[in-house]
Amino acid sequence: EVQLLASGGDLVQPGGSLRLSCAASGFTLSSYAMSWVRQAPGKGLEWVSCLSDTFATALYADSVKGRFTISRDNSKNTLYLQMNSLRAEDTAEYFCAKSDGELRFGYYYYYMDVWGKGTTVTVSS
Amino acid sequence: DIQMTQSPSTLSASIGDRVTITCRASQSISSWLAWYQQKAGKAPKLLIYKASSLHSGVPSRFSGSGSGTEFTLTISGLQPDDFATYYCQQYNSYWTFGQGTKVEIK
Image (cartoon, rainbow over the protein chains, first blue to last red):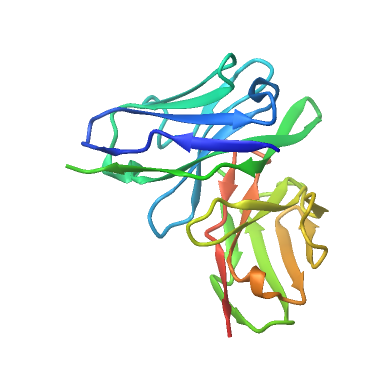
């Protein structure tokens, strides 16, 4: 069974750092694009970052570019999100998601087919 | 950036009703659209991808249609398990979600 388990969420002060982990089971993480999506309390979903499969290309939302870094450890089948210079507006539940999709016209079109239970990040003094 | 607008924001319906949710993109996204269901305190679940393809294991009462900038999610015969919030998402250029539609019990 394909499963994702996110962890690492915590209460952190503004300007602080945190690393989220997402342990994958039932599939080989490096064979798929993987994403982080967040949801602020009472709000909708916001895509944060994506790591492609083949060349491990990283993409980021403008709101986190330059502060967050997505990566993976193939030996641990785990995805990470390193979050630096945290702000109050980064407070949210963070979900990791496996992507699927297709290659068309030289581009990959990914949607998120499996989601893990979220981990909560609170940025507050 | 591509903006996604869902309507309505809230929908009150009864068991057995046919429910339709609309999603509009600020520019053409071809058929690169997905629909997700989220229940309170839970992770989203994929329902539909590529505008009209039903994800494995999703009941056939869920269906999607549309292309370009106009899309709909239809639930034919609302069941108790369907009361939740639904999000559309474009994946034509990066990823953007609609603001969500909460389906409530009437």
